[in-house]
Length: 353
Ligand code: 5GP
Ligand code: MN
Image (cartoon, rainbow, N blue to C red; front, side, top):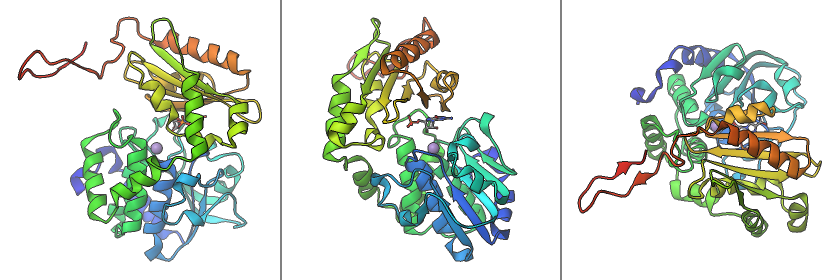
């Protein structure tokens, strides 16, 4: 499978592999509000390292959301630790070091060396060894390539974790970030024993009653700009409280918002218990939503980003919608990925625009 390795990784992967092999105590950490890739990449790496017999501490400041508790090893994830020092910290999927959270960050600082493994833009890169590839669809794919370099077996449990990361960050191979490597690595993970249907069932067909009602509330609030190019929805603190739901129950809701025909950008605003507004931004090709999110102190990827605003909900909606409108290119097709109807019987579909 060496042809699956994404070239810029080749330089730092051997360094990372040596550092990992040479360490006897490691701390692994991922970002706050962890998603399937954050947890899948961290747990996949941790389970694969078992034969090396090292002391491993797994940290996620916000714990493990219910839908990811099926992941092998999820019960080993801690929100903090009493361990005093580490030879090595490995931080996964985090964009920049602050994203591990204010309580985990000082624990990472106790490590003698730090490895950053990520597929976010390089701007936030950190650590002594940087295993980065912004074109990898998921951090889990990068971990797969690292494990190959380490020569460690991909057990069915490891494969399950990494496959979960791949399908959650690619929307089950539907998003723009998918590459041939994504499919090659996914195939290798299936060969190694990952059960794709069971994983998808756990992640995508397992919404609680409250989370499903919450989706309904969000969709009832749907708004759009007059040209339909920006579509947004919100969930109020009252919605959360009435349903006994939490922010993790909003996973995937924003994809319905972006999925509206004619929308370039879909936004989901959530009013948190502390009054702050958490925003998920999803784009098709035409707007770099990471740049918009950065202006509000957040970040992410070109097509999927997030930020938090300390403002009342209507004001947050106004500010972010205006910023997205200002970022819309005036002459681009509103749905560049859409295929035009085929020319006729037997005709080839054409790309719009
Ligand atoms: P989500 O909308 O699912 O919370 O986040 C989408 C993506 O945006 C995440 O994968 C993450 O990379 C990024 N992201 C979300 N919130 C923040 C934030 O507050 N700061 C930064 N730097 N990135 C974020
Ligand atoms: Mn990721």
